[in-house]
Length: 276
Image 1 (cartoon, rainbow, N blue to C red):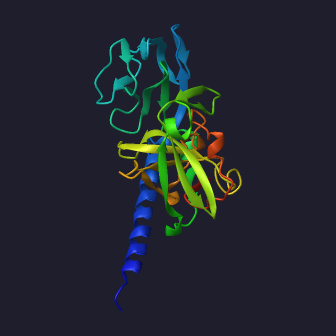
Image 2: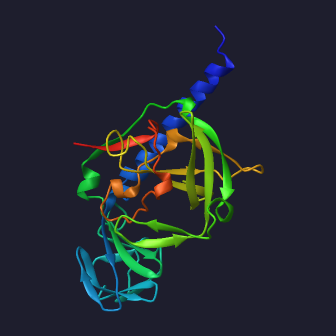
Image 3: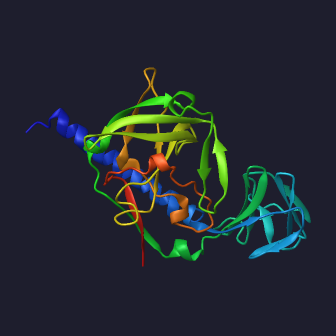
């Protein structure tokens, strides 16, 4: 019997979703994946000793300066030796332990000009205890269209205050609003600028819904394509994913703004980490 176009579309949809799930698992549970973050140490101009990190570290402007590193077991990613002092900018990394294996990574993270040194450890308890990520079954009915409006028009203001899980507040001006219908209700989501899994420009959404904290994580993320020429954006709720702070307490994830706390149940996308 010939396979209909509808059946082929459904098969392709399910195949693409499974591929996305595999990629997500690698990104989260890989040796240096999201769940391997074992510490975020905020730096000040005063040198300090950090737990699990050789040497002494301080902020040098927006960079991290490590001292006393010679002979400590710290190397560059390629295994080459470091000097006694190393100055690292945002995103720079050093390795502690195995030169070509799954040693600990030291990576610099900067938030609003303040640097932190992150310790990414394959042996982190949250990573080694992770066995899966539960998800709702994929359903094409959870793919819908929305209309995007730039923030200055949609919000009547130039900036949005965003609160992060550690209580830090920041303001974002790269905002917009998505208008869409879900379960017969006219709803809106506020977006900010972001990047997708490949580093391409995208719309970023942080949301919660009536499943949050019960059937799913307290809040979730979406990365959406940029609007087309007519301002239309496709929302695939099946690609909703857990924020990094679900897998480690050392991330500083943004939380949903009040307008992104949806009064409906979004039973699509990732739900919760699975352990044990």
